[in-house]
Length: 472
Image (cartoon, rainbow, N blue to C red; front, side, top):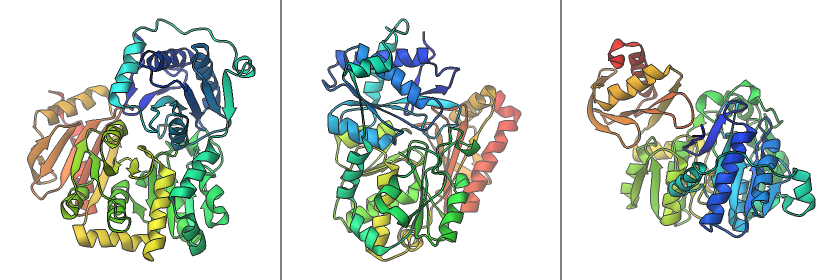
């Protein structure tokens, strides 16, 4: 068996360890077989790649495999954001392939599959690709990239301009431009670099826009602990807000005009309110298991249905393509809205919030405060704990057996095991413990009315990792 397993969004592995040309060849073959055998599309694949080490070379290698197996191949002529490939998949009615490890640490690379509808391949589609892996015995020989390109079997092209034109049609670019507000942008050395500047020029102040495959020495993830450089930039340059994107620009984190972090939970809630009240749109609210309960309160107030999925945007995407969804998203910065791709798009979402700020005439902090006043305070906290396998499995088992009955002095009143173990506490706060689907870590999340309480719940749970009870 191959050491290849798709996680919450694609296949990822450490470069030169699991992520090798040989394994990439096998994954590409399996994906090509799936496309051909299930007749997914006649238009082949569109391939993009991020700013990571060897991503262009890996993309070229995958392209040769697809071309040799008879699929038309279009490949990006430059580093490209994942939402651009999702757009291109829909535009060309093709399967999108992105060589990226998204927000993972610099030593990783990956392989994302986008379906022709413009979103992540569904769980059933990924299962079908994995089933094909069992029938691929070894890597196949392919002619060199340049040879296949000269033969016209691989075409190199610019996808970004078509994507940006779609953004111009869906966002009120003129209103944002004429408002004169400044936008801070931190693409975290990733493939979102320069995109906002292409739309707004000097209105955008960008940091970390240079290509750095080491991402400044940390994982390119727009979590609160990584937002200090953007916060400083926004305050120092009198920006109205700041937008941060992960390594492939499908996720988002934001800061308000004071440099204060605005989580994806709040972004989802802001967008639900904006789309319903200002755009007069409606539909189901979709959230993953670790996402804020404020959305539940909004759904009730707005008279909208709400559904909860396991963690991973592919589950949200599946709901979007099969139903009528107003907003859908996850805690880790993946957000999708009606009227755009059935996909996370950190660039589009950031600009939609910017449009909201301009049209409301209010600051971003005031818009967040409006939410709290209407639906109550919701504060969120998360820790990713790197621990050994024995402790990680022991903690999951301990929680699964409902042995964690009190956390930071609060009694547990309910358990939900949709994806990991969510503990509901007596005061309505909650704490979730789960294993990462893509990394060797234990993720611990909480939500409470007060930030200090949310942190205390997580920290008290982390302490259990050092207790002998979890190993029994």
